[in-house]
Image (cartoon, rainbow, N blue to C red; front, side, top):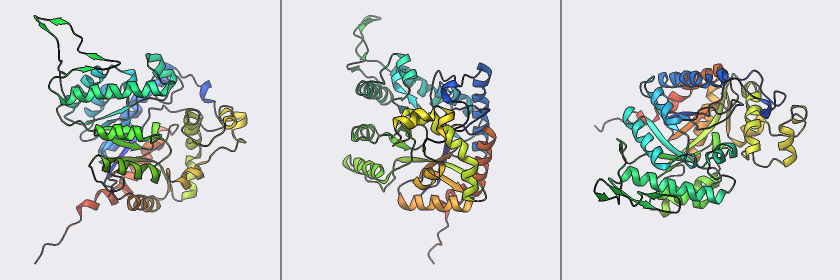
Length: 396
């Protein structure tokens, strides 16, 4: 039963022009002052969400994006700031990209944020997908096997640090602690200081390709999955959700379909479904310009990807449309009653699903994001948040 709602903001600034006919993605180079507006934009989104009782505001970690699409480099630092501007809203790390961190520094930073916000920061980890970001931080991403190997060892280190009063780890990439003398004794174990206030640490990871290795690893560490939005674009598929439940069951955790998952959807409310699609069309196109070259729009040919980067060719390249997104179920468009009906269908399909993300894609202006969150929060969300509060008559 869906009763909890969040939204993911990848960290884009407002643009002067958007869509297939607008400035090519690689030609955008915004001034520093413009790029820094992402922080005011995120504050405004968090304020609306907090006021309307959304549960979690998710943000994404990214670096070096002069184009203005994903401009927040440190989620935990910013989360502490946002928590002090809001009252109840949780701030989600969607996601801290582990290969660009030392795992002990990430664990320390999260523990500090957990204490300073009294548990309002939700931990999340990912492997990354931008070569410009990950490789610049001297970590592998082109070599996917090396990336996953490093990531898995980093997560092992972090969960040891969270869960054990003192620990050691001796792997391929990390030797913790080094075998050195310290104040009259030989160092054999080390303690994370501080450790998180709330244990066990709730952690999320994107489910992108849905490989069995990734699912097995997540379930082993009690990590929950997020499908849809940001790195996990494209919406949920029944096959992935079924295999996730089967993986949990093999580990001894029985759930209904959709358990331990968050599924994300792009939404746009308007008086009719047609009007909603018309209003959101350019947002869909700008988002596709950003994510299709990174492999998150499946089925596109090399020729279509090249054409997508050329405003003079993109419109005639046979690219996907927002209507395709609506048919696939990753976009929920229309008046509040139709969007609510679609969410009802989702919870019937996935009875174990308790939380979804709803939001606007990269390219959507701040004004529209705030309007959509306000409208959804007032006219759609209450229908579901109150599901669990139905009074049951007492026996006579």
